Amino acid sequence: MLLEAVLRHLAFAAALALLSAAAVRAMIAWPILDHPNARSSHVRPTPRGGGVGVVLAFVVGMAVLYVAAAFARLPPPQFVGVIAAAVAIAGVSLWDDVADLRFSVKLAAQAIAALVAIGSGLVLERVALPVWGEVPLGWIGVGLTLFWIVGCTNAMNFMDGLDGLVGGSVFLASVILCVIAGQEGGWFVYAASLFLAAGLAGFLPFNLHPARIFMGDVGSQFLGFVMAVLAVAAARFDAAQISFLIVPLLLFGLLFDAGFTLLRRAAMGERVAAAHRTHLYQMAQRSGLGVRAVAAVHWGFVLFHGLLAWAFLELPVGSKPMVVLPALAVQAAWLAYVVRRMRRAGLTWAG
Image (tube, rainbow, N blue to C red; front, side, top):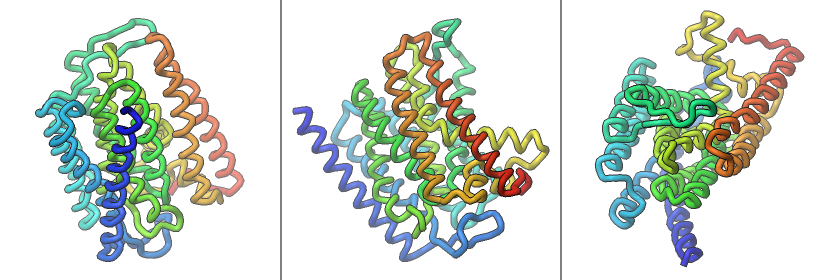
């Protein structure tokens, strides 16, 4: 029975992947062109907005889930609130792909969408810490949830600058999360991550280097928002909500690069919202490392973090947060490697 159910789920996921691919092909045929500039990694006008395929596959999957699989749904207010917020993020982001909205407008839309998800009841209520044990968050949980959702949404957007990097990383993270959620009985997270992986499977063949289309903000912001929400939903896997760390762990390579770059630019007095190309992945590519190689490095990070997530599930509650340390060590090594390449290539953090 279990094998039969898994095969049905995979068949449905394959249909969603085909739907995503059809939408991506349509976006290539009737393109929103991304013209290169001094901050771009591409050299010729390339269609963007391929994330429409991912959004469409996910929304169709969720609609079927709502009608046909009540056991895998969140309570209706949470389910409707989360999906409505995700669709709203996708809509504003697609508008941004067409019209290049100001960062303040995008940030406001992200905050409103996050508040809709929070208002529907999806909030971190407590965490477990190594020394203090289980700690209730109270109203701090609302602020932490808001910060996490908006931060993750922007991190995926900032990191979407090389062919296949974010799409491939989130695809692998979604597959791993799907397996973990299935093992833990978190059926909403299982279904949502499966639909996300299916949508990305339809998109990725068009986005691998040299990309025929970019996912655009409609893809990157949508992926960041949904993965952030799934992290909060995954917190329900255990009473202490320590499982919230699973998604940040899987995405740690992307989050580290985005966070390090934000802090470094702020420390250097730069406008953190201004366009630039000084993320670690960009500096690695500018120093001579190939686009495919940089993307593959980040895919490798996700696979390594997947092993850490497996170990995470087996650790005692008080030791679980320590699983971040080896992930941090790997990112420190990557940072040192990129800095060494920068020095050899005569590159600086300026511009």
